[in-house]
Length: 267
Image (cartoon, rainbow, N blue to C red):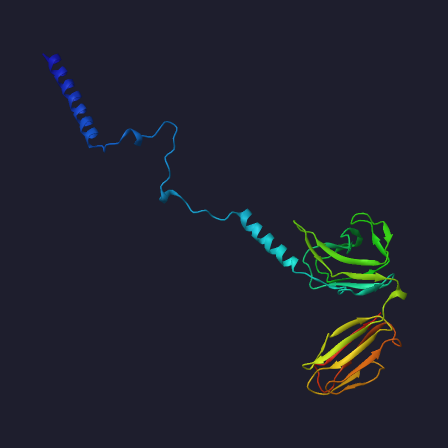
């Protein structure tokens, strides 16, 4: 008698479970076959699940490196000046606008062929702004200290900084000649707006300096050495010959107008 009752309970339980499953199935939304994911497919991410890209450390470092290269590339070589004459076997000052911040080198380039002639200085320091060069010898390469003599010609000085990629600055074309081939030139200093332009000058002994007063007032220039006082009225000019001066630096100034001061170096 108990066996039929147990079978009835079991049958009733199975029917109840089937009813629950059927009810759940009927409540699901309808989907077409194309809406069912294929085997191995990945469903696209929703907009809320997509994270915005962030800058990586590599990208940030690259920006810093690019800015450093741009800063270094703003360096300009200010001496030699365009078409300036440098006498062979004499000391000359190569100058640039600011310290590069990194090490580098200076080398000489043929202005016509753009080929490298040799190294002026295999190493310059990050703080350097000038280099005194004896225009007689060059190093064969940056790593080879063997020396070679310089020939007269038209050249360019290049500065290469140790960066990746390297930053390069170059001078204006200039000329290296034998001392007796130096053309004696007349350099000009203008007095205008209560100032002297240029404020510094380098000349070879025997060259002349012309003082031109383009200001609205008369100027009286006093030498800070055993020289001649220069008096210039508005629109006047006068010339100083440096033949009698020894190599060195000389200065003129104005007692009445303190901003009128300049110096020149005789080589």
